[in-house]
Image 1 (cartoon, helix red, strand yellow):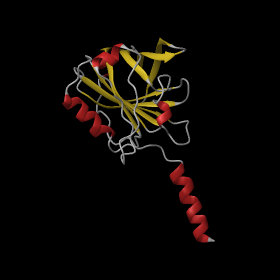
Image 2: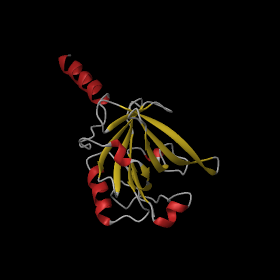
Image 3: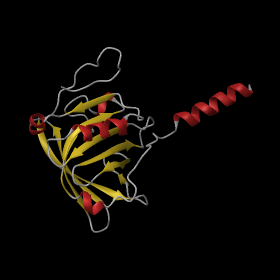
Image 4: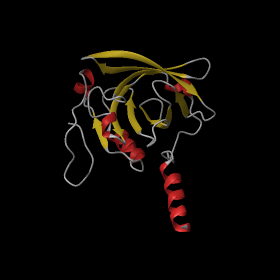
Length: 194
């Protein structure tokens, strides 16, 4: 009986844990992230978040605008009803300068993993309202052309995270409705874009 209670207790504790984000930017200067950005790669813990062009977290970030209050406006494009729609999301500051809270459409947290401010910014969005704490990450670049070093940083940042789908975009795909997702390579369990 004690073993059964212990197993049940462990299952409840393990099932309710949030995704652990191993690294965040220390001392993020929100003013330095202001400006134009391009989504060049995405990854997610749940295929449904990115698989279809209308996936809930399949968005193209276009601009980041810090507010005087320390919050962050995120201007993005999302595919809805057969067309690209511009949306603005307000990410509210928290005690940690690299973490923001978003209440629309569900309770989400945004974690800035890494940035050099001038070339790239890596971030993840965690849906904390979801019992499985789904996670999606993006690599943003100041220009559509991104060097291999930035992509290596993105791949290293998401490696310890539970990612099951990954999309990369070429400069020509950034101008269109988005990348296409292919079936996973045999034995990898991952899905990659063309």
